[in-house]
Image 1 (tube, rainbow, N blue to C red):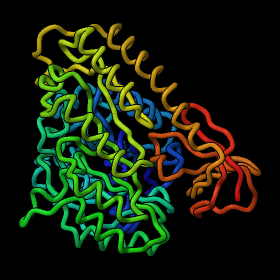
Image 2: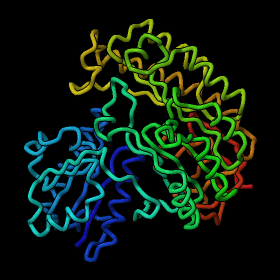
Image 3: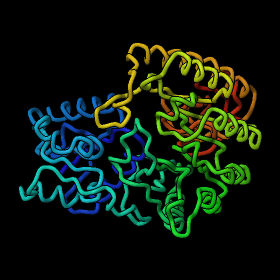
Length: 442
């Protein structure tokens, strides 16, 4: 049976998708394919974090459902955050779908698919409590989508209660994997040829605080750094409040840990941060980022922001603009506030129009383009190690430096010959743009 899987949303979703494929690959009679038109089963692992993600998920489902009319498709399965968020209400909305499985059921994909084929599934919607989902283990089967880089999910769920965020409802409380289990998985990945381990969680900097006895992300990083000096280790999805000072010192100590700090702050106005449920203020944020740059001058700083949050005034927005201008992040993303009636923030007074939110988003992104270009100029005529990732045309390769995270940042274009995807090479930078940089092979 030919199966095609589409993974939408974040890197955490991608790991779930790779595990689903891994579980199916273990069973006889299931063959994963890239061409949806030849698939007898299509699985869509969805995202529903914001409205744009919901719409993308629904559009993708409807598009793929057309293969029931013009392809070989017999069964369409929708998994992940979209069905988990909307539960049984989604069944009547998408009658084209044969089964909906929530975030707590993705590890059951093999059994679900077999029952579906035998017409013995029993029910169309499967939503076990995400809190009782067994954490991934190092031996959990997984087929990765990339060979030279791998995401490593170090925890599941989230125990923060930001008023604009649906994640705790979709993924359950924060639960950390054991350090030794993560070490074994990472060692296996590196042994298979992985050159970069990207640690991810809903709140990666909260890692280990729920373990007995409590652990910390710094301890995990220290352990993983000993696997090999010839790899990169990167952390994504941090939180300013749970960012411990010992993590900065650990990153500073180990050359193979990327000095890359991904810390979404969401806003800088103390008034808005309080409404968001983020328990820090502007002064705390400034001290945090200044401390990072003081300890590691070459550190790359990345953050994400939200404009148009309920009650955001011009004064609040001016505070945000001033903050961005003061810190001068290396990279930055901005979302407009996405409202929904299942969010606590939905009930806050003084909503901001989408038009105003979008104008504020555009304003900050225009600012950041100038800042990013300015900061990229410091790379001119410097030589960096680059991880080669693509070869789009003869004589041209695409890769990333330690200050460029996969998917979210710019890339490094390399002019050269006979490079191999997955190798580290030295590149002298001779051209920069707002987000991308270019150079010659040394």
